[in-house]
Length: 166
Image (cartoon, rainbow, N blue to C red; front, side):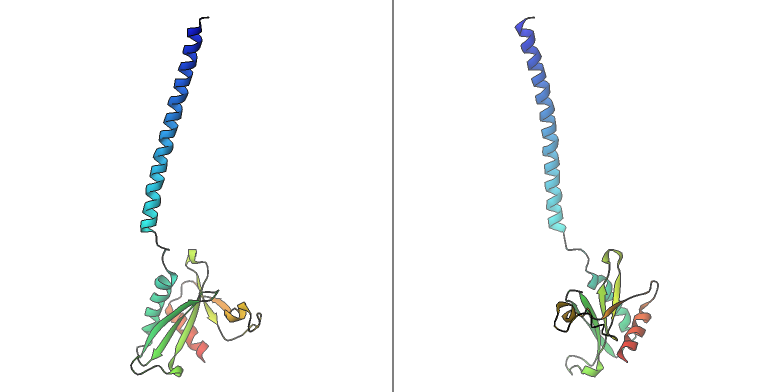
């Protein structure tokens, strides 16, 4: 066998290898550029996502307020480890000032927000599971979350709030 045949065989295999490597490198480069564009688009348009307070609690407050035409509402929170968020319905206005006894309130906690689950806090019974100055105690975790039944309207929440004020 001639040396030229052996060398040509090597050169051919080396050329095929380089062509495959260049092809794969081009695909990798293309994917990296595509990934960079997607990362840029994500960072440009990325927001933390919809806020459960803005998208769930605020519309609930608007609907509940229709039952209290002599009041206005404020949304407070989320606060603490349980992300408690309250809707307070006040009589009066900012110019006159708030009267403490004129406030009606209802407090919510998020459940599984991927499913839009929220609960209401029942302050009628302190479980005393957590001590007064513990993290659990300071975060209101001695009060149970009550599931909101499916297919209820905001009147259920109004009734819950009014019963809890008694």
